[in-house]
Image 1 (tube, rainbow, N blue to C red):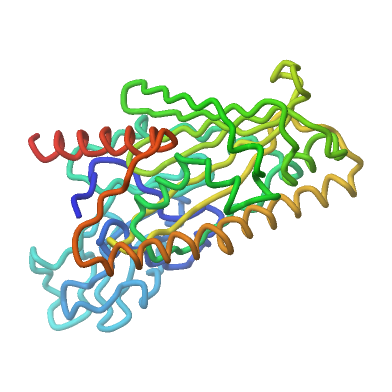
Image 2 (image 1 turned 180 degrees about the horizontal axis):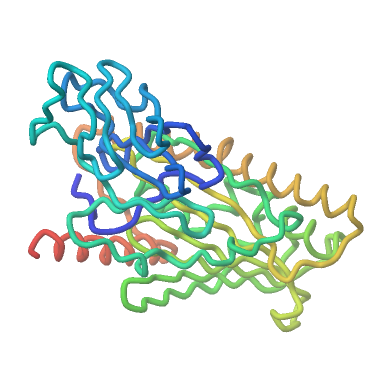
Length: 348
């Protein structure tokens, strides 16, 4: 598989990178170990000691809290990957005694790693600033799920939300939400696919956030995609015929980290938009239920279907080409953009 390399990939939620911990991750086929330095900055190194190839995440931090000591023979490496301590013999450090280092930053509650060979550009991190000031009472858990599939199948799933009427029937969609006005807006390298569903019964999640009476509503969902696999869903509900500003809903964060050709880390969270005020006990219940419903939809409904889809594709005797429908405008358009970016990178 050809990867897009000169871009930022999410390694984990920042809250999960604890002080003193060494966290291994695989990103586009490269094994990395991440840790926090004593000053709070984040180091990302190749997870392989150059001496006997022991995984560095099985070591520990040095006394200064910023170097990483291999747990096998005690060689110590700085955040830049250079060896700073050889406890053996005269302590000579050969030039080859170094590991690859990666630029890593914490932004929008996430740890981002630059996988390319060009100078990292922090401005290229997709905008998830809504997470920065998110109120915990109106935010779901910052969650993560491993899916043993090609990450592009998950992007296909997210950019064609017609499936919610079937796979997530009752929770995120229903038989009437299949009727939708679908629009695709491509601006530069950003693609947004929008679905507008007027005068439909409210799915459970949106009824919970709105009137809680089952009365018909107008529903919308606009999914933004940035290469290679960073998505944000503006989804909400309003009274039939009313203005959108009088409605409510969520901003759904969906960020995919390809580990290998058949393994993906799926990071997700939801922030309520224009939240309706409920009594504290009810608000806490809504936050819990929001987390539960999203986890259930992704882990118990999406994951088994996409994993089965992957098995069918891998087991086919010949390469498969899907028969395209109008609902596939998002998957078709993002693939064109992604392929162009990968080709441009290969030629530069």
